Length: 229
Image (cartoon, rainbow, N blue to C red; front, side, top):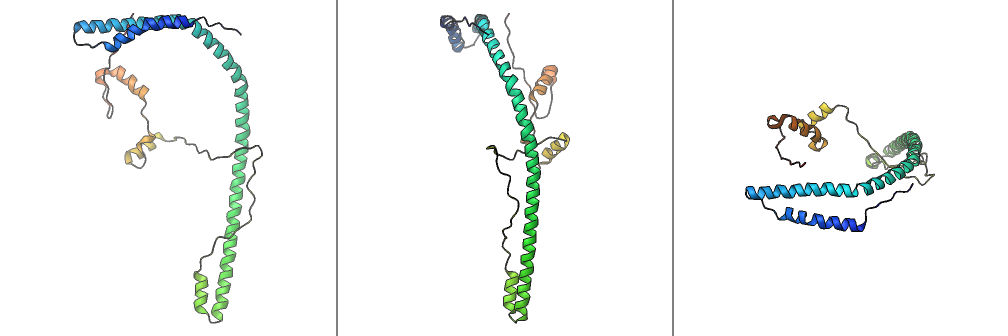
């Protein structure tokens, strides 16, 4: 797979010399009357023609480079694509299982903590009863008022890393009711930045309606454009 790029450094320098006067003239022109308007349009036409010339000169080299890039990219993709899919398949299955197991582990920990707290409360109550029966009512009340400190519990150990993997939270969102989201923004309960205007649709509507384009919160104007044959 050999591709020859024939554009030379000399070609680049020749084009640079041809283009520079056009760029300088465009920067210098000030349109103040009909004559300078005509000059500006002549410079613009030269710029348009020069751009087409540059495209023609570099087209063979660019097409050859693109062909080579495309061939290499397709070869890489033929390997990387399936490998990425294999990675996603395995990690998705593994993460789902890990999340289920972690949910079980946390539920077990909470159950053990609840049991330990209940046992501590019962022990505290028994101690307070003994103190009160012995006549130490004030001390018994202090025992009851003393908050129970969190007790260490032995739950299942977290799942260990086996392939140097790092597991992070990866929260995703999906808009299931756009109208409800819009209403929430209008009500002020959700920030406006969750909504983004569709500029493609707005531009298309402005081009179709022109000066009749009227939409609350949107301004349309004719910026003008020039084309050269």
